[in-house]
Length: 104
Image (cartoon, rainbow, N blue to C red; front, side, top):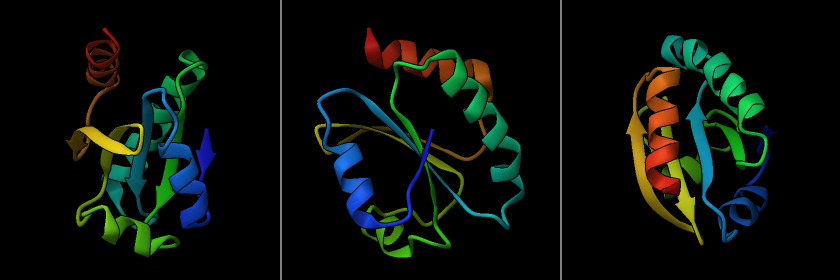
């Protein structure tokens, strides 16, 4: 699991050919705090699937440029483009279903 500190890291990550998963979150957000361990578990169980976290308090410009105004938001990228989004808290099972759907 990667945690971004700047826009360059984010851009390099989302521009890969493989499907990439980014959770936009914030330290003050209760649903983010509940979702973060689920995302870490998903990352542990799917080690070949690129996943990352972006703290919108630290890397504000990236969130703004990507139209992220609510957290948590999970975006799925391929070749630098958003191909799907999940807004708000979601379960482990729903994330697995989404990964399976997008990689089928």
